[in-house]
Length: 142
Image 1 (spheres, helix red, strand yellow):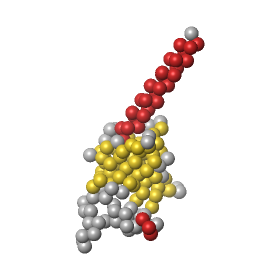
Image 2: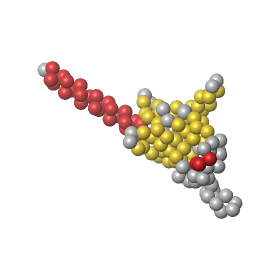
Image 3: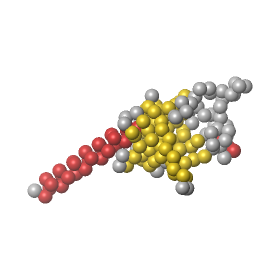
Image 4: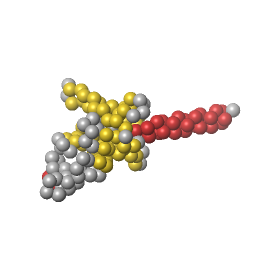
Protein backbone atom coordinates (compact mmCIF):
# COMPACT_ATOMS: atom_id res chain seq x y z
CA UNK A 1 0.00 0.00 0.00
CA UNK A 2 2.84 2.41 0.87
CA UNK A 3 4.47 1.62 -2.46
CA UNK A 4 1.26 2.48 -4.33
CA UNK A 5 0.94 5.76 -2.40
CA UNK A 6 4.54 6.72 -3.27
CA UNK A 7 3.99 5.96 -6.98
CA UNK A 8 0.74 7.97 -7.03
CA UNK A 9 2.41 10.95 -5.29
CA UNK A 10 5.31 10.84 -7.76
CA UNK A 11 2.97 10.81 -10.77
CA UNK A 12 0.89 13.69 -9.39
CA UNK A 13 4.05 15.77 -8.82
CA UNK A 14 5.16 15.13 -12.41
CA UNK A 15 1.77 16.31 -13.68
CA UNK A 16 1.96 19.50 -11.59
CA UNK A 17 5.46 20.27 -12.93
CA UNK A 18 4.28 19.63 -16.49
CA UNK A 19 1.24 21.91 -16.10
CA UNK A 20 3.40 24.67 -14.59
CA UNK A 21 5.86 24.46 -17.51
CA UNK A 22 3.00 24.69 -20.01
CA UNK A 23 1.60 27.74 -18.20
CA UNK A 24 4.99 29.45 -18.48
CA UNK A 25 4.97 28.93 -22.23
CA UNK A 26 1.95 31.23 -22.58
CA UNK A 27 4.42 34.10 -22.93
CA UNK A 28 5.97 32.64 -26.10
CA UNK A 29 5.34 34.57 -29.30
CA UNK A 30 5.83 38.00 -30.83
CA UNK A 31 5.01 41.17 -28.91
CA UNK A 32 4.97 44.88 -29.73
CA UNK A 33 6.09 47.53 -27.26
CA UNK A 34 3.89 50.42 -26.07
CA UNK A 35 5.35 52.86 -28.58
CA UNK A 36 4.70 50.43 -31.47
CA UNK A 37 8.34 50.81 -32.51
CA UNK A 38 9.74 47.36 -31.81
CA UNK A 39 8.57 43.76 -32.18
CA UNK A 40 10.11 41.30 -29.73
CA UNK A 41 10.00 37.54 -30.12
CA UNK A 42 9.92 35.72 -26.79
CA UNK A 43 11.32 32.21 -26.96
CA UNK A 44 12.37 29.47 -24.57
CA UNK A 45 15.80 27.91 -24.33
CA UNK A 46 16.97 25.43 -21.69
CA UNK A 47 13.90 26.14 -19.55
CA UNK A 48 14.44 29.93 -19.46
CA UNK A 49 12.72 32.69 -21.42
CA UNK A 50 14.44 35.18 -23.72
CA UNK A 51 13.36 37.93 -26.08
CA UNK A 52 15.01 39.34 -29.17
CA UNK A 53 14.25 42.22 -31.52
CA UNK A 54 12.67 40.90 -34.73
CA UNK A 55 11.29 44.11 -36.25
CA UNK A 56 12.16 47.81 -36.22
CA UNK A 57 10.66 50.57 -38.39
CA UNK A 58 14.14 51.01 -39.88
CA UNK A 59 17.15 48.74 -39.69
CA UNK A 60 19.63 51.25 -41.15
CA UNK A 61 20.65 54.81 -40.35
CA UNK A 62 20.38 57.56 -43.04
CA UNK A 63 23.84 56.63 -44.37
CA UNK A 64 22.75 53.01 -44.94
CA UNK A 65 24.65 51.53 -41.98
CA UNK A 66 22.90 48.99 -39.74
CA UNK A 67 21.43 50.42 -36.54
CA UNK A 68 23.72 49.43 -33.68
CA UNK A 69 23.75 49.39 -29.89
CA UNK A 70 25.46 52.80 -29.73
CA UNK A 71 24.34 53.61 -26.16
CA UNK A 72 25.80 50.47 -24.59
CA UNK A 73 28.03 51.36 -21.62
CA UNK A 74 30.46 48.65 -22.79
CA UNK A 75 32.32 50.17 -25.74
CA UNK A 76 33.09 46.71 -27.16
CA UNK A 77 29.35 46.03 -27.57
CA UNK A 78 28.41 49.28 -29.32
CA UNK A 79 28.83 47.74 -32.78
CA UNK A 80 26.17 45.05 -32.18
CA UNK A 81 23.26 45.32 -34.58
CA UNK A 82 19.88 46.00 -32.99
CA UNK A 83 18.12 43.60 -35.36
CA UNK A 84 18.22 40.21 -33.60
CA UNK A 85 19.60 41.64 -30.35
CA UNK A 86 18.53 39.79 -27.20
CA UNK A 87 16.96 42.39 -24.93
CA UNK A 88 15.34 39.93 -22.51
CA UNK A 89 17.41 37.19 -20.86
CA UNK A 90 17.17 34.41 -18.28
CA UNK A 91 13.57 34.71 -17.06
CA UNK A 92 12.16 31.83 -15.05
CA UNK A 93 8.46 31.09 -14.63
CA UNK A 94 7.15 30.68 -11.07
CA UNK A 95 3.69 31.15 -9.59
CA UNK A 96 2.19 32.99 -12.54
CA UNK A 97 5.13 35.37 -13.10
CA UNK A 98 8.41 35.44 -14.97
CA UNK A 99 11.27 36.66 -12.77
CA UNK A 100 14.99 36.60 -12.22
CA UNK A 101 16.01 37.82 -15.66
CA UNK A 102 17.09 41.11 -17.15
CA UNK A 103 15.77 43.51 -19.77
CA UNK A 104 18.20 45.61 -21.75
CA UNK A 105 17.13 48.98 -23.15
CA UNK A 106 19.24 49.87 -26.21
CA UNK A 107 17.79 53.41 -26.14
CA UNK A 108 19.18 54.01 -22.65
CA UNK A 109 22.00 51.47 -22.56
CA UNK A 110 20.66 50.14 -19.25
CA UNK A 111 19.63 46.79 -17.79
CA UNK A 112 16.70 46.33 -15.44
CA UNK A 113 15.25 43.31 -13.63
CA UNK A 114 11.46 43.49 -13.94
CA UNK A 115 8.72 41.02 -13.12
CA UNK A 116 6.50 39.92 -16.01
CA UNK A 117 2.90 38.75 -15.90
CA UNK A 118 0.12 38.14 -18.39
CA UNK A 119 -3.12 40.07 -18.20
CA UNK A 120 -5.53 38.11 -20.34
CA UNK A 121 -3.84 36.21 -23.11
CA UNK A 122 -2.56 39.11 -25.17
CA UNK A 123 -1.25 41.72 -22.73
CA UNK A 124 2.14 41.44 -21.05
CA UNK A 125 2.68 43.59 -17.96
CA UNK A 126 6.32 44.44 -17.24
CA UNK A 127 6.67 45.75 -13.68
CA UNK A 128 9.80 47.79 -13.09
CA UNK A 129 11.08 48.94 -9.70
CA UNK A 130 13.97 51.40 -9.42
CA UNK A 131 14.46 52.69 -5.91
CA UNK A 132 11.13 54.14 -4.85
CA UNK A 133 9.86 54.44 -8.42
CA UNK A 134 7.50 51.81 -9.80
CA UNK A 135 6.28 51.64 -13.36
CA UNK A 136 4.34 49.15 -15.45
CA UNK A 137 5.10 48.83 -19.15
CA UNK A 138 2.58 47.07 -21.39
CA UNK A 139 3.35 44.97 -24.46
CA UNK A 140 0.68 43.56 -26.76
CA UNK A 141 0.79 40.21 -28.52
CA UNK A 142 0.85 40.32 -32.31
